[in-house]
Every structure is written in C-alpha cells, then in structure tokens.
Length: 252
Image (cartoon, rainbow, N blue to C red; front, side):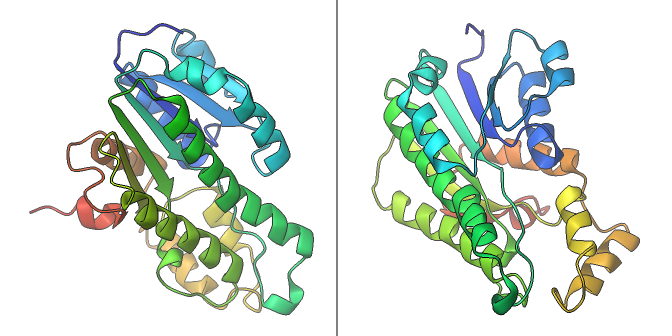
C-alpha cells in the first residue's frame, strides 16, 4: 500500500461505533488505515479505496489472531511509515451480571477480546514496525477500569488490565514507542444501548446510563474520535500511560 502520509494506523473494530468514527477521520486526514474486524466497512472502502485495507478477523479468537500475526501483513502495512498508530478499540461489555450467573464461555470471550488480543497486537506492532521512528499504541479504556461497578466485574477487570499493561510498558523506556490506555468518556454507541437494555438486577446502575441518554449527555462517536485522534497524534501523547480524554480536552 502506498500513501503520501508518513503516518499509518491500525484500528480494531473499525466497522461501527467509535471504531468507525476513528477510521473515517483517519482516512479523511489522508492516513492509511488497516481495519481489523469480523466484517468489512463497505461504505468506507468505497470512499477511500486506496487508503483503507481491511482484514476480516474474529478478534475474540486468539488462535486466529495468533495465525494472522504470524503472517507478514502487519510488517508490510507498517513498512515505510514514520509513525505507526495502533488503536485497540474492539471490546465487549458482556457478560453483565453478578458473578454466579456469568457463563464461562462468555467470560473467556470477553477476556480474549478485551485483553489478550490488544496485548498481542501491541507486542506485534512493536516488533513489526521496527523501521518507524514513532510507534504509538492506544488502548481504549473506560472509567470502569478505575471504578468498580456492580454487575460489571469482567468488564472492569479487563479494562483495568489494559491500564496496567500501559503503565508497565511505559517503564520499558523505549523512546520509539509511546503508549496510553485512554478512557473516551460515555459515548452514544450500540454498547450503550446494550447497557440500557440490561436488567436492573444484572446492572444496578442502569438508571444512571438511561439518564445520560435522556438528558443528551452522551458524546457522539465523531466528537470523541476527533478529541482522541488529536491527542494520539500530538506531542503530548505518551507522557502519561493512563488518561481520560475528558480531562485532556478540558479548556484551559
């Protein structure tokens, strides 16, 4: 793939929600995108045929992800770029509910998608983009990583894992690699609809999220993507391994 931009980006879960907004805005900035998702984004491919490369990959299947990493695809995509940006966006909130009602397979899927695959891709990116003078990794985190919520034990634990991974990686002191586990705030996506559709007995704080939607307090994916990308591509990125976009974007 050839592109005039010295920046290239990998986005997981690029077909909907925040991931789709991130991919669209990166492409609009002239940045080549490698989208990793279980499906393809036909509209974006039509609009940006030369800049968007897509791989259909079940990101919760760590064996499949391992096989893909073993190919030369990531190295080939990153080849020649000065800056390579990985955004680990794909994630799931299920299983929701108290511990005794959680399905073992659902737990395994959540840990695979929310933790194992982001960590695997981060390591693969660091190894593959050896020619890039600037490698950047964004884990899409959550306030749930830093605050415990009843019914969200798996989601809280998996997002907290991303935060701590970023903290530890930052101690490697690799000057060619920057990492941040970044909470994007509460966004109006399918995940929010899923949360509002859960029973109060599963998620006691459901009413709070219903109020956010009712009162127009949810950020749009587009608003969040703009703030996130402005930060991820700024000189300030990586100065702190764990951050919240709502704090970074506050006016001075």
